[in-house]
Image 1 (tube, rainbow, N blue to C red):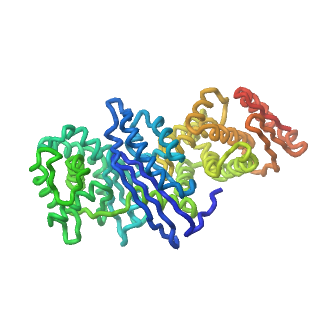
Image 2 (tube, helix red, strand yellow):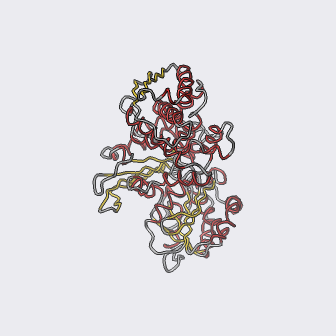
Image 3 (cartoon, rainbow, N blue to C red):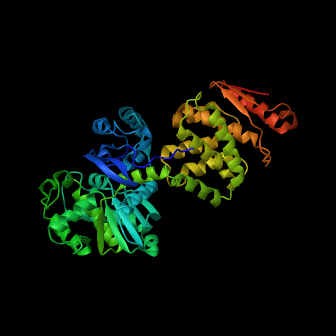
Length: 501
């Protein structure tokens, strides 16, 4: 259902709502190559605005909204389908994230995707890999404000991804809250980071890598400092020896405001001790000798991933196929259900105010609606929803994952008011309407017959659904007729009408 994005035509943009900084990248396609034409960054420090209950304070939200209003001016010329806005750790952990997202979406007039940690790691690798030449496995590390991502990949393919709950802003609040620097506080921060990394170190070292690369602000700042001090390698990389020297130099300052390191920007001083502690722990825990740097990061990964979605390279399609194989699903049956669901979508998308991306969501839910049978046939729709809600699904944002899970949860059995409320809270009226189309498609294939369905006509105004069969077809398919009569009762419970003949 996705239309091709014509190369060299128009602008595309990505916005990264990071825990430390918000980033904007506007790009143009030049003979299939993404060329950045505008890049903006602002230190919002959203993670610093989390209170003791993990709620974003009003002051932090106002900082963020003011930044987004400025970004909005740069996005005015970008078509909505060419824009993606992703949010990371601070909004993953904030209890009032949904409230903030609604306010932010009103400012930008565009949906915001809160992405899972491993999805963030995958997108970071996509961005970094575009800037690097050569073959062999590489380790990529990205230190953010609230989380640090670790990826091992080869060429443009990530092989191992992980996101750890440690970042330069969160560690600043925890270990350097008053801005004081001491050997004791620094050692505590390094030890805490090493404890986090210990959970993944063995697996990563067993897979191995041929070179290590860092991305984003903290590693860039450390590299700049050691280069200007003459401590970098001949290739300009951070070395284990330079980390030891930098520690001694950093401890000469007793307060972050007194830090005087060459090339270090003033707005980075506050978070430098915490950022350095994480870099130091990475070197120690993974036994690194050197760490290179790449300008590629999350926003570049989002741009390239978005381009892939329009050029038959949508990672979400590969994820669905992988799930079908992993859980031993009947691919052919899923395809038949999806074909019927998409036929209903095509007949009703205008009257139901559905969008192109809704069709993709409906098709994926149809392909995966039986995934829960890998656990048990009884209540398999509930098991399927759980699997989709809590699995790592490369390419899917958290809202997309939640929408997919809810469609699978509600595709059969009785529709209850709480189901309606959940569907509405997750995806609004469009998601509820997709659920109705999916239910009808699954019902019509209840017998699992390979005999193709006749051409069916579905008309609706959103409240009344009129399904028309060829004359005499229902009489010769009594199971389908019985299923429809039961479904009519389920529709009626939601103040909807289902008519068929």
